[in-house]
Amino acid sequence: MRRTLLFLAALLVFPATAAAESPRAIQVSGGIELGKRTYVLKGQRVTLQGARPFADSGFVTATVMSHGRQVVARTKLRGKVGAVGGVKLHFTARRTGTYKVAIRVFKDTDPKHLVAGKLIAVHVVDPHPTAGSHGLGVKLLQKGLHSLAYVTPQNGVFGPATSRAVLAYRKANSMSRTMSADHSVLAKLFQGEGGFALRYPNSGKHVEFDWSRQVLVLADGGRPVRIYHASSGKPSTPTVFGTFHFYSKTPGTNAKGMVDSSYFIRGYAIHGYAEVPPYAASHGCIRVPVPDALSIYNWINLGDTIFIYQ
Image (cartoon, helix red, strand yellow):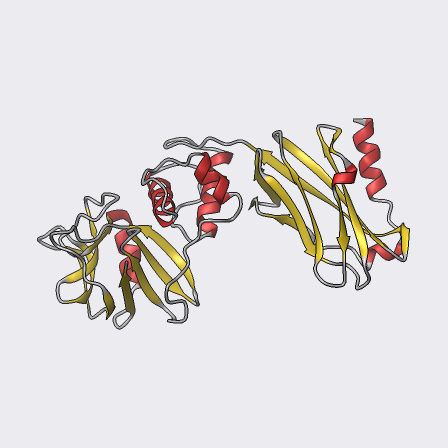
């Protein structure tokens, strides 16, 4: 404890110039932010990067403490701060708990004079969220999915909606089509990876359906705003490919069991349905789970464009 307090106290003793040149832009690259904390996955390579705090060339060092002990050799966390680029350091979080990282920046013209510094806390977790579970691990899973536009609540409970979001994420990333948030899913989410790259980012408000991955995407402003698990036409009754515009909408449930239907050509529609398997199985329409149908129906306006491709 004494060693930790001395370490923290030393970090806070900056020269007068430090306040004007504090590297506020330095932050953890990757990880998931929840509240005011940044969480990373156990075993993850943690990258600290940001803009340079001054125009001259110089160097940066960092001290990493965990459980009151220095866990990374200081010589391994030293990098250049040049006129081009910025601060960038990395280490591997090998144990759970809180890591305290003290970053110090110096100029080459005065290598003994500390000109900027920052203390960053990194919280390392090893979650195993499963269907029906709850707690911090589930909240982090939900926050990671939500930040990439996958539709899930953020209530800390791994319910059906979160399971569907995990399935959509796995489908969008060409992973096995299950609802399991295993380590392969978490490893990508904690790096901020696995979003959906739009095929038509310059088309304003529109819908995209990727047949090969069976994923429905609502997009606006050049980015996905909602990503859903969906199922299109089976081989014997395939979904049409092309560019279409929604011309009719029918709320509620019809005689065929279609819920909140938005039609884009002839009898083809996006609609809710009781069965939405992880593969193409419909009679040609794009099925979505019934709990998602109304929000999709309300988001789509008559005249909006849908792109269907493989």
